[in-house]
Length: 196
Image (cartoon, rainbow, N blue to C red; front, side, top):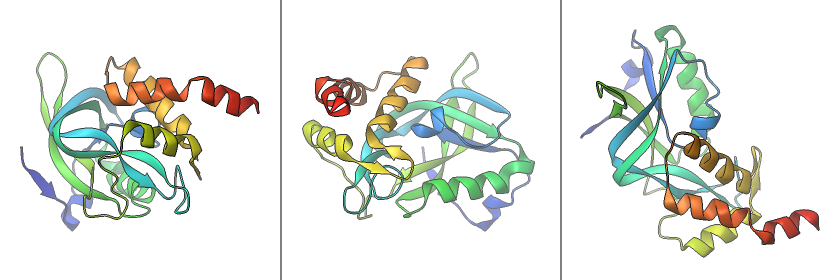
């Protein structure tokens, strides 16, 4: 159940890299992989717990994005990246995920779902609870309010939540809080706002 902090040797290991996707990496990985399989990890859960100052918001009007937070369990996707693409993939992921260093890069045991329940060590982006962008404990209504008004360089926050829920549904993953939020984001308030 433990986790390993990365050291320099991790970047240059001569073996395939596993990456665990739980949010936008499910529907927009952005890197080459040789395998994409449903997987889950224990001891971490998907949470809309990070203020986005970049991709889906700004420091003045932050959005909310997903992180892996401690406790519970999380189903998602494990990607196997060929060893020859390891360094380039890590560079890409860091440029994408770590613009404000809100995540800790941890290697965690992830179980591949299927007949043999294979276990692999995968790179996971886990929220740093000590970071200024950590946004735990927000009410559902507050999350809705934030997501509705936020926009960053990767687009609006509303689309991020809706696309993530669509991708989860395609994998038969129900994340109750996110699903309710997505349904409310699709509601009349936003239709009216889009028309006006």
